[in-house]
Image 1 (cartoon, rainbow, N blue to C red):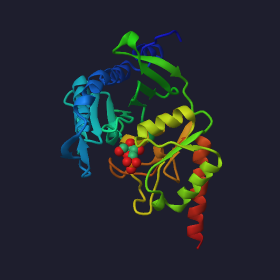
Image 2 (image 1 turned 90 degrees about the vertical axis):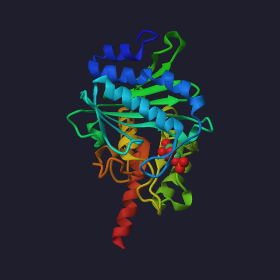
Image 3 (image 1 turned 30 degrees about the horizontal axis):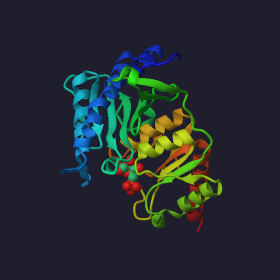
Image 4 (image 1 turned 45 degrees about the vertical axis):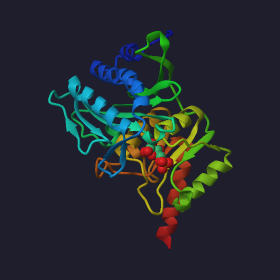
Length: 310
Ligand code: P6P
């Protein structure tokens, strides 16, 4: 593909639905006002989300900006956001339902570490939530560079904000796939991990994988996508459902992982196959190179079998 292919050109060349192209282009173009806001919203919002968690000022601001732009676009029927108590519907209707974590890793804002936006897209006719029904997913990563990693069902492509077209993302790589595993990132208190996860992490170390954990799912996922490996926010003895939310964190990343030749699991089955009990259901998240996910599920199955036996 020739140099300096913009995101919009790429999607048009691939004959992606024009409304889907418009939606992705709209959301990607908002990175400029979002990045410009960072220095001015480093603290707490003084509010709590529906889970009782303190909202960061930037959480609220990014959520409100993205939600309003989508509802006003005529492209989006409804939005489900980690920062909103309920699904919100557009008066204009639209072809898509969107789920999002508007600012994943916002606890990293004050320490200037990686954070980003996670988006999952469904057809308007499909109830948003069951991951296999997603038709597209992408994340924007706010790091030294601003990048966008996307799949519309035809592999994974990475784009980068480049000076040539300031308000554009330029194609960096298409056909992004997980390389041979080199690193792993694991959240939660290791003293409370379920024993089978502890065993799996020992296996990763025996394979020579190095620990890299940055405190944002979007940043830690991006690391394993580029270096190969595994990310897990596991089931723990006190929180068997883990921490991350299936619909607006796990599923969009699981969709991208699958498209990049990787896989994901809750320990027994693929994230994309889990029908959420609630829109904010938490699940253990295990994601990365396919062979590592297979090993994890084998270890988890052996543990289940042993428990059932005795
Ligand atoms: P901990 C960020 O708050 C988040 O939801 C994910 O992005 C990240 O993987 C995880 O929580 C980090 O959790 O317990 O390490 O702060």
